[in-house]
Image 1: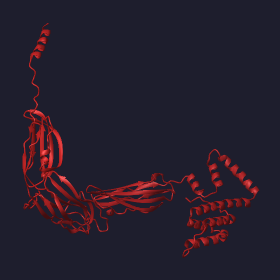
Image 2 (image 1 turned 180 degrees about the vertical axis):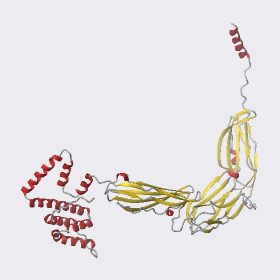
Image 3 (image 1 turned 60 degrees about the vertical axis):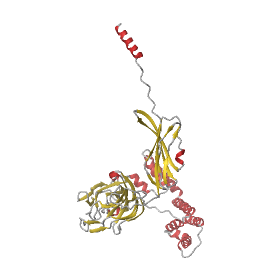
Image 4 (image 1 turned 180 degrees about the horizontal axis):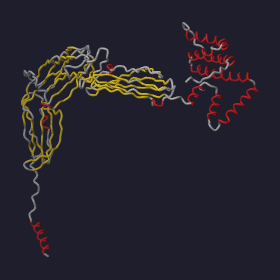
Length: 523
């Protein structure tokens, strides 16, 4: 009962208490804000028009009576006006005065609300004597290190700092003839907010001295015009002081390759796992030298020493370079073709490259350790495939049948039956059949070369066929005709390769004899 009475009492007090007054609407206003009181004829004048609480739009037509609107932007923002939060509308207007004298802007109207008015004096442009100082414009030339080692990277920075716009500038950079150089960037324009804000034009070059002793780099020179304002203009001519380098000689003997780098690594890779090599296999080994802060041509060639049981053929070197900021990443990739000659253990020597660590000023050495490779014996299938590369089809088929475990017991009876049949037919006829098969194969090769228009290939095949006296007598006239057309002096009509191939094919089928010889390579 008491609780119900208390609730009813609170509700009654809430209903009887006076409501807070509604939020008062700010009084309407229009304000014109002027940034400067004086301007030259031909310059633009910027004003800000701000208003709030208006029922009607602002009439801006009075502004165009004595000036031209160049551009304008509009927006709104929230502000506190006389203790009340209000939304303020604004319009920023850039005006170009029409004539000299006093220019009055305003008042502007919006219904019964009237703005203030502002005035500006428009005068003839005049020039004020002004001499720019170091706080207006300056030129700097610096190097990353004054005492580099021979061929060590030096960063040359040239920078022009200015607080005001410049024009008609003429830049003369130092002559770096006789030095190896890499341009990182030139005339890079940036804005720096430190120290009140500067515009910066920068040049960066990497220098690699090629001789020891003193090296002088002339100072850069920049001239032009600088405009502090419409009235304050001046010419400038700045010259940076020369930069002197004291280049230290190489720390290695003259007979040793000199590589000054901040980092250098040596690594190798193989096109095939060398542990699986067998006699007769070929593999490529790639040795890669990666160095920082050196040019690619400063990296020496890496060589592999001759090794018993291996045939090593150099395949050349590829040098590349990329810029990472002010750092150069150089790389030299050397490739070798290696052929395993015998199934014996072989030993690859250690690969060493001595270099100078410019980070701590000491000699260092990159190493690929020596290793042993056990060359395996070639398996039977590889030997047979190599031996039968040019064998007749029936011989390859017989070997395949003999290689199958299930048919191996039938191999010798089958071969015996073939031998008996061959004897029954006659050994001479069998030899003639093989010779015809061989001649047909060569005739097909000749036809293929003729259709492809390969006259030199046709010539080489005929030269191989003339090793036999009988074939030489039949093919010699055709070979002479082809040779005169391909290699003879003067303009000789092109031969009919198809006709020559057909004639040579017929001659080969009539004369070629089969030669039997072992094709198994020696181990």
